[in-house]
Amino acid sequence: MATVGVQEARTPPLTSTSEPPSLFDGTTRLYISYVCPFAQRAWITRNYKGLQEKIKLVPIDLGNRPAWYKEKVYPENKVPSLEHNGKVIGESLDLIKYIDANFEGPSVVPTDPAKREFGEQLVSQVDSVTKDLYAALKGDAIQQANPVFDSLENALGKFDDGPFFLGQFSWVDIAYVPFIERFQLVFAEVFKHDITEGRPKLRAFIEEGNKIDGYTQTRADPKELVDIYKRRFLPQQQ
Image: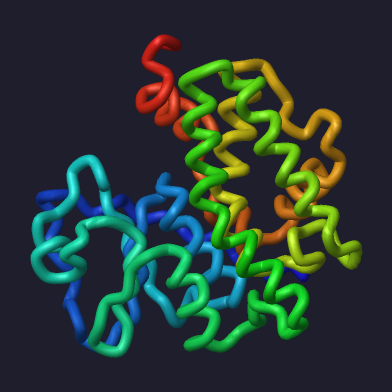
């Protein structure tokens, strides 16, 4: 189940003073930020499929991003984006499926119709789930977030052939895990609350996910993630 690989050395992110790479020279490049959960989705997909040699990782400093990125690579000026076959594709959920369909390696989309249907349903809900969790941070965090985490616990019980949303690791887990990772950290550090308490399926999801190299290779420093969330969402905590 786990894709075994050597931990990549993380090169410094490109900044406003960095020269652009040789754009559109046939190299496939995945532009990311090391701390962006959306970019992490595409990064996990790349790693899980064993594409470290096929897709070059290009980290961008989102706080001091190079002008050429917007001008020459991706007018949306956000990450992730994928430079492939002379074009640039964006949007993290689309990129999971694009990388899966256009490159070799284990597929993250199951063939079972029931799993595919439930997977599409869960992925269609991920934005509203994360929006509700972000909103909870600004209110009575634990009380407001509990129903959201309960819904994840219920969804994880749909299939019993593995600990993930569709049983086995899939594009649904890739869509959710960067945010579950961050909210677990923030709730533990800031609110002294364990989001897996009373939720054995969510606990198993996190524990088994942490055994998948393709995911763990993309994790950011926990302290950095908590600090980012404090600055952006919890000014009263400063």
